Image 1 (cartoon, rainbow, N blue to C red):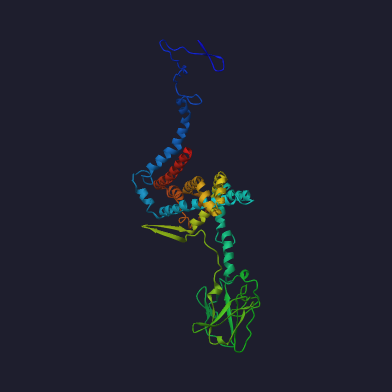
Image 2 (cartoon, rainbow, N blue to C red):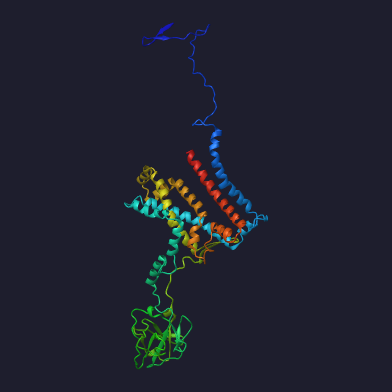
Length: 481
């Protein structure tokens, strides 16, 4: 039975069931028969587990077993023969070297990742606005290609106390000497039987008061011939002058056995140019002058009856810079029974770490910065926001996930810091720069106390777990987005 369609063509009409005048609905697709689950490659779960078995074995042997053994071993003594409970953990928080390691680790975790991330953010933002940004990024990232061992050796030399070797102290002393000139005679001192006497390092005074018209000889020794000032000239005997006090201050030493005389000026002896001489009477300086290139000097009549003094400033040791690898503390916080302190050697090593890892932070943050929609930044500028407001209110919030990745990565990294401290810190201050990873090595191999070393390893694991948990939680949140 057919019925004409609107377009004039025939159309089949299905017959309704018997006794029904309604049209029957078209039949749907046949239901699929259920089948057993298979993976994309068609393998069974048992086969997949078989291939994963080597990975599980390695994971258990290299991760699970060492962690479990370290936890168990931390409850035994150094030999491993006696169970001592939590004694190793008590030692960890009471012994001076382990307390210093915990103290330094706190500052490492707080300061080093924060500074490196902040510098990386600044570099990444600023290099977008300069023409030679790529070259700058290359220079900043280049330290990442250097091993920790090589970086430690480099900075051990950079921080050398001797300004002739250490670059930092060379610059530091140059700046210092620009504003405060050092003495040219730091080791000069009088002879035991000379005309002046005093404590080592000055000041030195004449043993008797001087009189107007008197010629005073102030002979000193102790300055090496190659360390005499370049403008020093052969010393000359003082010329007498009525109403004035004259004299000569010079190097009273002639090279050669039996050469020259004591308290007499010889032709080969040099004067002390620039040496300051003061006339002291009643505890007050009544006159002063400086010696000429040949060591001669003249004081006015006011010096009559006074004692001549060579002040300590003449013998001040040359400024030798800062002991960057010393144990000096410059920041201390009292927290109940525990004192947190930051010393100069730890800070110096942190600078080396930041030098290495700021480039890593810059590259990751720069990649995140490239993914920020420029329309948002331009819209903020059009609305009247300053560059600082755009940076603080738009750029930084959008970069928050990347900043979190960089910060967490560096925090985990500094908890394992070992080689920089072991190489840079000298033996005299290595205890002050100590961290948990270094203390673990020293306890296990230098002291042979494997129980304490295991306790330190467990503590490091407990410190890393919250950071890893935070990172995993953040990654899952990113996946949901």
